[in-house]
View 1: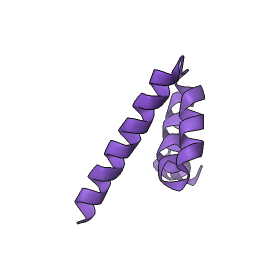
View 2: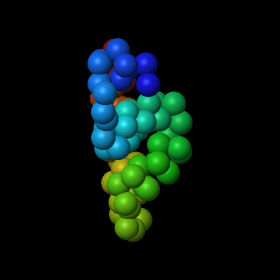
View 3: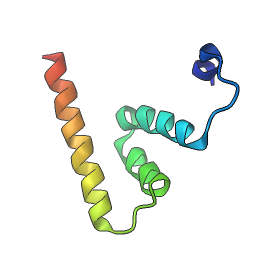
View 4: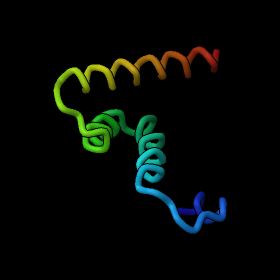
Length: 68
């Protein structure tokens, strides 16, 4: 909420809010992130979960590589 106020945004789409929640959850709690994304992105089968987990692992490796 503070970020949106600081940015001067008066209206925000639910997609924008979802993206902000995803970015915070990804680093805070990976299990909650996957659960949230599965609902937000309307996962249909196990392949959607596999893809999201692989992407999360790839992002984590990239983030660690940038810190080294």
